[in-house]
Image (cartoon, rainbow, N blue to C red):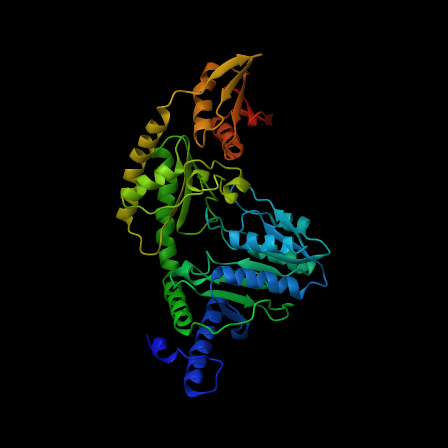
Length: 430
């Protein structure tokens, strides 16, 4: 509130009001540096977390343009990082994506293999925003340091819980992720990193910056205690959802994960319908399912992990979440999923004909999760060792059919072009 009265002026001016604003800005920068674990003169405030990412990536690439134009990112980075990579690629640069395992984590060896003599910058999130998996930042930073490549860490999801470990070079974050006001981003550039700013600085929003740093200090003061409490609640969800709801896959690393995020995918349900039903029951959750997006494309994170995307539900527990709210969610979820499955199971199965000992399931024109539902209906009519050919033009089927096979211990043979879409081959093994 004091910053609203004292911080309205341009901190770059020499008159009295400008000097007062400068004092508030400097104090906020000192506090932010303490929370991050860096020097105050390494901290820059931006208009958003996205602006921090784009400024950090562009500035680091420009500062090291004599080295080369190669950028390395993980396949599960936030879209702001991937978009920054697309901008760089459109300008003539090159980008390499490092794959992740089924838990959504990169391997340091993956970065070691991706780095080249012309690599100017590497990027890695501290933790994933969709599934909560914590990345091995310190190990990757060591690999990058040995290769002489700076590492930019997107710490938006984790900075509220604690500083990012490791010898990283640049760091970005967003205030609204730790409960601060929207419109404030954080960019840290370590001394010694070649950096050429590509965006001219504007006048800082002093009241918002002060509020952002105050909120960061407040959540950090309770982070250890609250993290332990939320971990217990998310573990309760991870354990009980598969017990209460059949045909569910809980995704993300079970151990190395953020305290308040848990994600699972349900077979044979429409993610958008599940979200609407849970919203009506008073629960605001998110999803990475393609059927919740106008693009009908599955989440790039779930796709990179190779896990089920249909019926995906991402639950975020903010600080202060009550135990009774979690229990009520667990009580409501089974009926919601059962109702949606019943609705989706009402249509007649797709046409199936026996052609040369191959059962053909025509699911063209049908969106997730219908192709998988119809595959599950007909596989019981196929003898063990028999082959099913599922025809689909839904991009999500490329991810969900192999994931279903792994969950059901069936053999996914592969895919091949087909008229109007793609044919996915599945062999019954049990």
